[in-house]
Image 1 (cartoon, rainbow, N blue to C red):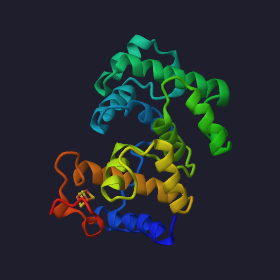
Image 2: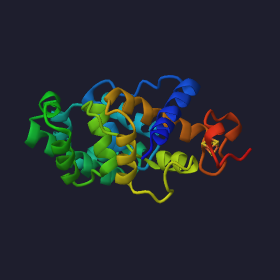
Image 3: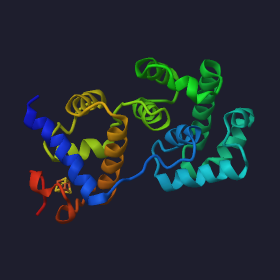
Image 4: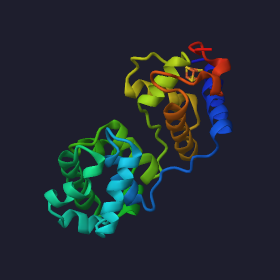
Length: 222
Ligand code: SF4
């Protein structure tokens, strides 16, 4: 990759930050809440996740010990607003069992492990895919790993910085070789991409006239 290419990735970050400001992610009061949110947000909007998390808080079970003891049916009922609630209740239980058996529910113990070890362990948990694993690593455990999602693929393929069909790992590797491996940078960058993809570079009708990346985008509709 050329030096120019590296500059493009940094330039996109600077322009998005200038347009949208710091996003202060992840929305969650504790690392555990972030872990739970990362699982609940699969295939749904954050608004729905917030409702599910509020239900867990109101029932006072947003705690790993208590949540593991709750029956799956009851858990599914509480997280219903997040969709796929039966599957997600199972996924949460799988994650809780892993978190208990490997780390005794201690986030700090988990944080001491390497990103590679944790990533392999997380991907072995049934229901945790690459995006969820990396979200937990970056936002709950503060590890320097770049999270890729559909917004990232859409925006960066429109910018001609990757192919539309690029794989998760290939695009992740591009970001992580093009940028310094810094948790704070990866945290902010992914959050800005999500905000931009939701509000400006939309799937069917991109708002190119309001886009700070317009001058570098070959796909601009204006
Ligand atoms: S100019 Fe349009 S297509 Fe290009 S990144 Fe911006 S919103 Fe997306």
